[in-house]
Length: 465
Image (cartoon, rainbow, N blue to C red; front, top):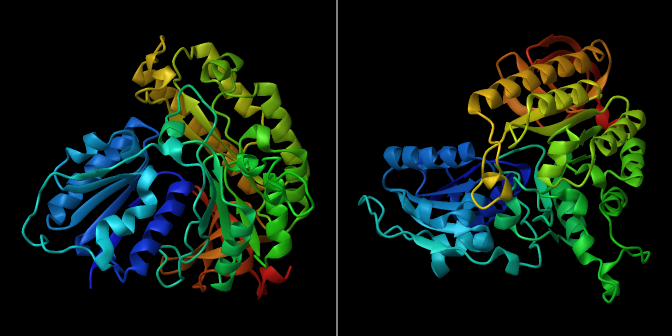
């Protein structure tokens, strides 16, 4: 029987896409290999947000081809959509499939026969790669990501469900709208069906994700299509979708992925604060704390708008993890601009940061802007913000020592302790071996590095609380 292996690069939406790709192969009778060396077909589901992301993919292609020269390599995702010929020129690549045709990957690899064409396997076969990339902006609907079975999923806990794809924003540094197209939403009836299916498989936490998640439903709100409104006749909003998930499914915990600051509405904040079934965790992309740089980035908010949202979230959810994406080295960023960002972050109740160094993406306005920042300066600014983030994270974790938290057990056991994730997004190692995918009450006792160490607080499940 043919075996496949899918490797994902990048964001949660890409991980959700990877689960859908796996489902396509499983439906055709293939089995999942434990590693690329054991597979007949390897799918690399790529990211192209930065130059280093592109380099990671190229290095991976060469490594896999060197270790398993007879496997057939398919490259898909955002890098494939942006630069298909560049990838096709790498030895070992058989197919390049853009986001425009990602839903056809199983058919491309297996054909109508339902299995991978293996006539060339074992011969070191190399021919001109097949490129399948179309106009991503021609896509106006989001196809449901197939639900994956517990015994074939790459993760046994916390699956991702992508309910939105694409982005209508035009941030000057970002290539994503060009490779994922316009914002498209999975209809709420399909979302509810997918969530209920995952609950039926035994999952206790679900991460709902998208490229611009807070814009969910905007493309469904056409006044001439009454059926594309909520049951009460109101336009569909992301907060409305979350409310429907709570009302129409028995999901124990919903975790919301990244939502842009302008989409953290008062309604959404109040909903997250009032429900114990929503993880106390808010990821709010920032990019910069400098008003001048935000304007150059074409971001749709100013620092004072951002501060207002963060302070509202903290007031409503005192124990919530609050994180942000921050970019250093955007063209024209001066020392004063960076210091403004650092001071801005220091003054906010953030608990973690994802710090990125600016990477010029071909075809974006920022790539041609004057004032490109020297790489060494960007590296130093990155270091400063990472240190600040570590300080904030440790201060946040310290307040929970000796307290009781909810945590879901993950699959990793290091011989003495089980890896967990708390409701408020803290990594915690729990004493002893515990079955994966269980909500437990835990008590953190010490902090080691970036993680907390803890012990069970009680024998009964936290889901009962």
